[in-house]
Amino acid sequence: RGLAGLDNLCLALIGVAAGSELHLADLRRSPKPTLVMTASITVFSWVFVFVTFMFVGRGVEFIGPGASTAHLVAVASLAATLGVARSPASAIAVLREMEGKGPFCSLVMSVTVVKDVLVVVMFAVNLELVAAAGLDFSQAETDGGAQSAQSLTATGALVAFMHPVFSVVTSVGLGVMAGIALGQLLKPPRTRTMSTRPNLARAVRCVNSLALSASSFWAAKSLGLEPLLLCVVAGALAANRQHGTGEEERERLESVLRSAMPFVNVVFFTSAGCAVHLTSVYKSSVVACTIVGARLVALYHAARVGCDAIGAPESHKKVAWMGYVTQAGVALGLVRTAARRFPQWGDEFGALMVATIVVNQLVGPPMFRAAIVAVGESGVDPRPGHKAAADAADSVADADAGAKITSAAAEV
Image (tube, rainbow, N blue to C red; front, top):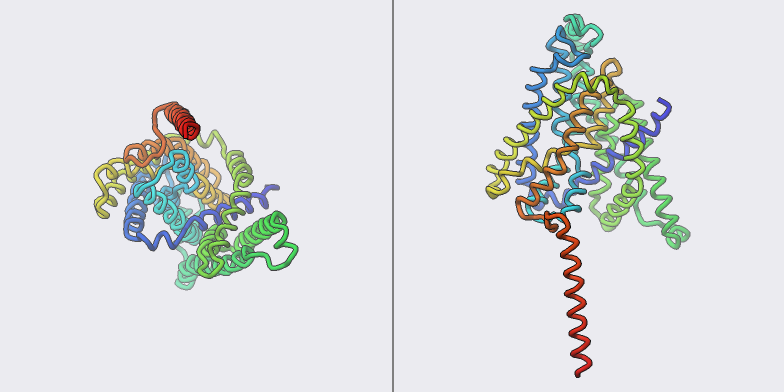
């Protein structure tokens, strides 16, 4: 608990980084494939995971076999929304490793970014609805926990319904304000001292951006709003400002995030790991594996439907689902948010979802690599050692060509 402030900073930067990955100019160039595939994967993933959890959820310890349907629906909806999440950072890492370029890789990246922004909005609404239900999980083994939600007056029901809407809309509005402020911090330095000292200007810009992100997150949290959603909106707005220096500001934002994210990842993932109770993970391992399986099946069918709708090549239809498996930072950030919002059962829910995220993170990158190779968009030969041998052969060829040129010049 003493590291709560540092944890908030990490979550704030994860949110800003996720939002900054959304490039509206790229999306406008080919909106239909991205939006169709995003919609297909979102619907299939949510429905499959939700239905699966409704069948197996009573096997989770903090729910119990006697839990009411309301309790089960609440947790299943959160798990289903997390099933939509994907990891832009992991996708970028695999693309760089495989030197992936082409329509398949571009579509996967676009869908991944849009889906990650969408899942933050969905999860924010989902959290507010679950909180508004007022379920008591300490009485989950009887139907008493659901009775508190049923005893609301008409006025109370209206307030409970409007609160999630107010929270999300206000968070978006404050996110817009934070994004404008962040854009101002990323503008070119105006003072002579900063202009002549680029390293100092970079350091000041980084500190100011971190301070603004953390303070925005803290303010939203203190007001009972959705801090992660606020930071995602701020990052998206700062990365897509349309004016003369907009591109420079976007590059500066990416520079700030590149500098900060290694530290953030170490602290955040270590903190998330420390919060996981292995006993809880072990007890819910069967449910976790079942959820992972349901999500993989959903991705397969969603990708087939999406590829059919956009007229993708047959080679893409067979492997497209393999590009959307990995989960990481944003998903874990949402899990941490839920754990804090619902201290009564959030930790146990977090342990279950962390188990699913870890499995997806283990199998996701190798599957994405295989998909890139299968569609022929990899710039790296998949055979072990071939790239090094090819580089050596290129060096020898260059040396031979240089020797021939030198010899020809000497003869002349």
